[in-house]
Image (cartoon, rainbow, N blue to C red; front, side):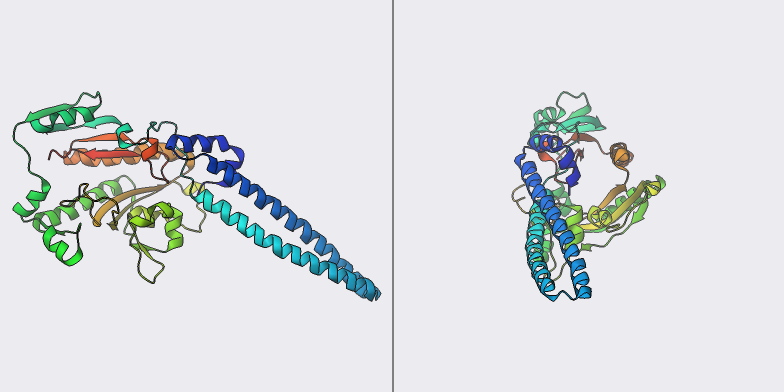
Length: 365
């Protein structure tokens, strides 16, 4: 959740960020309106409590002096004060809930280097790496994706096979039997592919441990309170699996569990940064993904992922963001996989992101 003090001191920055994302900036004024009502109500409550305390002191004095007639009057006034305080406390709670509900829906402040734009067509490739083998039938699309960059590529005349076909031909995966027992977009990994999945994960973890990252296998489920602290649950909830009749959600990424690790704790600045590499299965409903990369083992409901996560001082976060990007690139380079790094435009950023790079591996099929 955005710090309310940021809206109080620099509402124009938040409005600028909202407009850059293509979002309504009037929400900032609505939050500040409820915040003003909340603060005014708090002030009124405090004033009435002070008055009540004075009356309470008068009661003690009148009791001592035996002035029963005045005592009854003061008690009546205190009863009226208590009634007013109780009514204002209800309003205070209501204003705070309305303010915080709106505040929760305001996404992170966009970094100034994030490209303008509202769709994936506005994402900006910033660098390419590797030797790209491009099927001649895909050449025009490939050149469009370069967006003016010069890259090392060769044209091949034979059409590469899809991974969907290779799963069956090499007997390394089975989506049909998985669909039979679990439904669509699940899979069995078999033989060499099962070993490769584990080997790549271990390779990535070991490489990051060498760079000072602490390996973590986190909880695969989180309570709602913890999940709300690490993601915009109002927007992301449809992607999550919830355990029936339990206050638990299956994680969609190890980032969720690691991000919640120090919930309700204060981290000392001297101990930062804290660097973690997490490994977990990830569970996603992938609602709304019908017809898009749904064959084979793309856009599935369950997969393994290695996740980098750093707790840092805000001033260091941008350089560390570049660090984790370099780490991911190093892994792809050691594996010899061509890729491009894309700076995601403001309209495509998730609510919790201030800036985001996508590293897109080249898939010739």
